[in-house]
Length: 128
Image 1 (cartoon, rainbow, N blue to C red):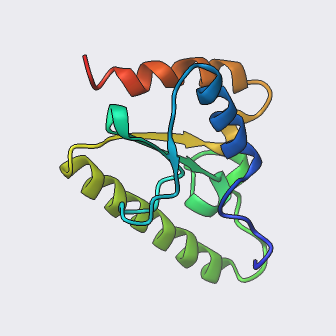
Image 2: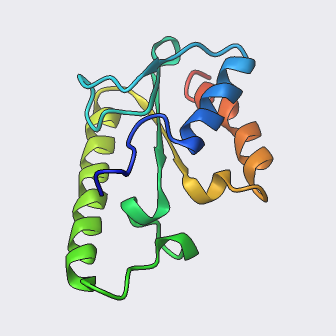
């Protein structure tokens, strides 16, 4: 697990490149915010989390299947990750932040364009 990256993952880089190309400027991994969001857009008071389906327990996703060994341990770990995600999201919402959650499976080739095109609307919709 020490080789699992938490920053600069391929899905994160895809979203960052898209946002930059559309003129959005952002900060990365601000530890002072709950949950250490992957992308922070201070101008829009919006944070973006890009979650891996396996690590964050994406419901009904083929990429979130539990391993056949140590199933109870993995299940507890993933449930704890999901609980931490929910707690961070609630704290950010109560702080007035717009929280955008993008799952790794949404950035696979079939859904990539569709997902990326929706992001600016999800960022700006809170301002309107």
